[in-house]
Length: 455
Ligand SMILES: Cc1cc2nc3c(=O)[nH]c(=O)nc-3n(C[C@H](O)[C@H](O)[C@H](O)COP(=O)(O)OP(=O)(O)OC[C@H]3O[C@@H](n4cnc5c(N)ncnc54)[C@H](O)[C@@H]3O)c2cc1C
Image (cartoon, rainbow, N blue to C red):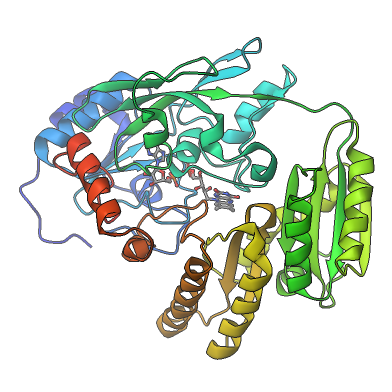
């Protein structure tokens, strides 16, 4: 529902430039007003534009800046933190039509892409050159590269290749006043000026609109990957095994954890003979010519840390269960989850704490984790009512405070968006928040861009 209408800005320029790519009502506007978070749009946007070029993004932002219209920047709306939700009387700026892979440069292992390219599409194109784009969020088939950069997305391969930031060489960004900024360089080394590329990575649409990027690609490892699955009766023992694996010399490509409750949920969603009788599963993968030997060594390490059973298989099949976690939880209507991270040495402690919180609140909590990064996605089971959600949010608050108390963070990869806005002061002190505000004000003085993030 609209709040009281401000004087409506003239939209003739948007109609003229965007034609049918400026929509002001209907299902298309509704679709791009939302994301995958559990939050609703902030009202009804005055319209959405679908630029195809950087010049068109400049026009849209110049128009919004001139008229003081708030802009929600949107990739493909898979975000889980409400960052792309539309504003009342605001403008939705969707990058989904800026989906061209401009160039793959195999010699320098770089890709130039528009922001709306889907992560998996880039990977498919890079594969022809024996290369891949390392950031691998579980949403890779639907999330945009611009969204990945704006959220500094993580995913399954961070333990071996880092987060999205580590794969971004240079950016083209349109600032709130419509001017175009270029950051970074095509070289591996570049120490000229401030690191503005890093400033925009993870900025969640608050500082500018990323229109294109130069990305670093990695060579696909030779040989066949090997995957292991270790079953632990105790999740704390699984946590200690993760710490030991991370500290060993053989870094896995992937190291994920499914607690016993999530294993149960996944097996009920799509049976695949998982040991769903109280087992917590650690699933890891090695690549390269030594993959099998490294998987065997790590299996032995897991046994030493209490694994009751370890299975090793060639290829990706054992990872399938991990990839089913999100759809399986969604099918159960389980949406109150969070994205905390702790130093990897604190994993056993955080699992102990989550168990305590579960008992204190009388709520079942399942945990899926990018364990090798110490990044956890606990989900709270709650009735599908306002009270149920409110009660679950209190559990999430306690888990978030627990992570902070262990030296962790309130968000490992999903970002702050609308969902965690009020929690920012839990982690950022006054000086840190004031510094954020100074940067925001310098780049977007009218605060038109994704302005609800508490900065
Ligand atoms: C099933 C599922 C699994 C997921 N798994 C993971 C995972 O493993 N790891 C992970 O990190 N995330 C995961 N996510 C969350 C989400 O997919 C990521 O945050 C993703 O990077 C968002 O991309 P998007 O294009 O959908 O962005 P959107 O949802 O459209 O936007 C997200 C934020 O980025 C900003 N933004 C988007 N594009 C731009 C741009 N071009 N310029 C400036 N700002 C922009 C928006 O304003 C918003 O604040 C998952 C989500 C789902 C639904």
